Amino acid sequence: MSAPSERNRRRVVVTGTGVVTCLGTGLEAFWQGLVEGRSGIARLTKFDPTGLRNEKGGQVRDWTFDPSGFGLEGPPDEATQFLLTSAREALDRAGLTDHSFDPSRAGMVLSTNFGGGMSWEEHIRRRLAEQPSNHTFPEASFHTPLVHLARVFGLRGPGQLLSVACASGTAAIGCALETIRHGRADVMLAGGHDSLTPSCLAGLSILATMTRDEIRPFSADRSGTLFGEGAAALVIEDLDHALARGAEPLAEALGAWQTNNAYHLTAPDKGARGMTRVLAEAIVDAGTEPTEIDYVNAHGTGTQAHDPEETHAIKAVLGEHAYRVPVSSIKAAIAHTMGAAGACEAVATVQTLRTGIVPPTLNYQDLDPECDLDYVPNVARAAEVKCAASMSAGVGGSNACVVLRAFPPSPFRRGAGGEAALLPSPERRGVGGEAS
Image (cartoon, rainbow, N blue to C red; front, side, top):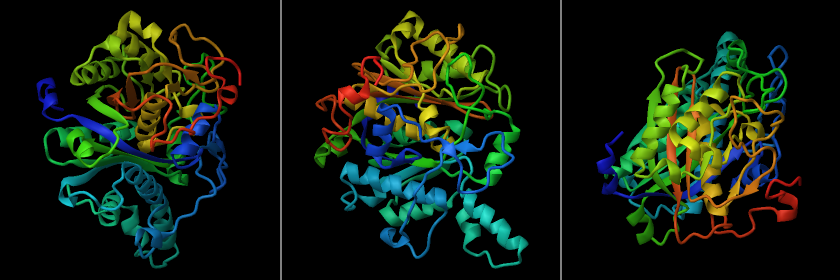
């Protein structure tokens, strides 16, 4: 990461977002589901989940994908399909789908935990059956989505793919921010993608971080997390470049940081030193103050070990101000989407900055004395949010954080593409903490 003094070289904004989750395809379905307090988590049907610690997950349902619509001869891996769809939406909302940009100055930073997981499952099945598997093997490669996105969208600038566990999506946004700050690109597509597969869920089930019932972030009766699939993408752009082409910035990307706990494969470090530092450094990199943070979109996995440590980190950095700041986790709505999690949460954070609505933490039931902040339990809330932090953590001790700020003149209660009707009515929404 750059030193704070380098921050002023370029201002960086978000000009487009796109998302695919178990709440549906597209930003409207995603945001509507979040603010209405719905969950897309249900029993898995894409394969037999018998034997897993939990048979439920955040599966993308009723999914169709037309390769020809992207100029592809055949279908890419399922996770790549999610990514291509979210990337097209983000670029479309940014007004960049007609390639009205210098392709040599446009790049991408992608993130994933399991790469082309479904293609790998099919590759192994075909090999064991002694059948040809020429198509499945390259689609299983982690770098293949870079190839597809570069060709489909004409992105000839810098291209990277990160895999730092569940901090990957947020880390990708930070890397895209840095690339533009240093003048290496004008436009960067930052996003994450993953799909649920028998192998990945079997491994996660063995790690025992998966709950046997429901995911309940920050609630005293929490017992673990649940996993989901999907993708999210954000167009990260140089401010001058965006304004010159008449784009309306959705939010400003102020700063970002990454750390590692150097402690344990799965457990957070005691005292939350890694998460504390990543939040503190991201705020410094943003050139802002802890008291200016109005909302924290938390990693909030619902595990016994993680949630108190994340709470401790927020309090350590924000001090007494932490008790005045809404903190929420969207994982009980869309599950833990692994390499896509940070990107999905960043999209939600941009929406909060745009609309003045904080998405709720679903399934919150009982107060834990160690988790004593305002977690926006169960019902969305209206709030004036000018500056927000989105935090992620992952297996292996990876941490990432990005700080975003509302960008004038965008008014509150407008959608990402300028729509005025993305939110349900106040009566349906239950704004202000009242039951809907």
